[in-house]
Image (tube, rainbow, N blue to C red; front, side, top):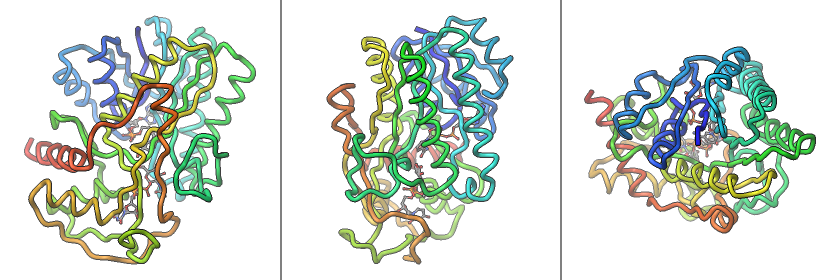
Length: 336
Ligand code: NAD
Ligand code: UD1
């Protein structure tokens, strides 16, 4: 089977491409490299000892998408391409709506025109918004998202639902990721954003490597076990494997629209991550407690039982693995 991976040079995309190649799939990538580097392709090829076909370009470029579908028999698409920085999306919402919505519409139009009707879409736990229970389950209604970024995810889910209602020959899988961290065991691929990171693990890595002086833990007065916020962190390789399971499930299932949480099901506090990171990597992190970050929820984590029951997927990597692999990647990246 040949899979088109949009955004395949990015953090989650690159790990998923490795899993696809390791599982015998052929892979075609389209990425405009707006948040990734071309070198990722050769790293993927080194890791897997397989070749990928790479088109450098924008998913909004309909002509290019048509060419890709004409040049290749695409059996399914995994759609990662999109902008993902929550804070930035508040500052430049139009860019987020333009990029994330336009690219999805263009992709879906070309898929329909090319009679390719199998898509896996990267959604986010952010679509749940604020719920009464911190354990998010797929039967909950989508909530009020906290940013234009989150809104694009909710809108795309709705677009996919409307598409399926109009054309029930589509197989659509929506995967709602919780907090992906970690890196490939090889240390060749991982997440290393430019500038000052917003997300916790990239920030910890910059403090651990002395690029930034100190981590601020946003709030220690929440009503949680130790006062810091609780999230469901998931190793990016476990997340990548979830996509293989989703494709296998779609292959043997009837056309439909399926939605799954991809998370561990366990809440971990910021303080627990810091402690685990220090212990497993045998170092001390410089940190202080600061004010709460606006918009943060005290606690949320996945109910991943639907993915286990229907996809046969669950996380395997531990918090220690996530901390170890993230650090291994950044040390290697900096040493190169
Ligand atoms: P990433 O930024 O590392 O990867 C996205 C890739 O898409 C990048 O390589 C970028 O260059 C490319 N891209 C963006 N717009 C494009 C366009 N119009 N045309 C072609 N390429 C384009 O992000 P990631 O962490 O790998 O996330 C992948 C997907 O998963 C995104 O849709 C993101 O919103 C979603 N997601 C991520 C997280 C997370 O915490 N990382 C959580 C939930 C959902
Ligand atoms: C964010 C996004 C969410 C996205 C997710 C995964 C927001 C509001 N939500 O979630 O849409 O799906 O990333 O990438 O941004 N923290 C600190 N100090 C820091 C950075 C973070 O204490 O310097 C804390 C935060 O308060 C939070 C936890 O670490 O409690 C995780 O933060 P982060 O990695 O930004 O992810 P989320 O906010 O959960």
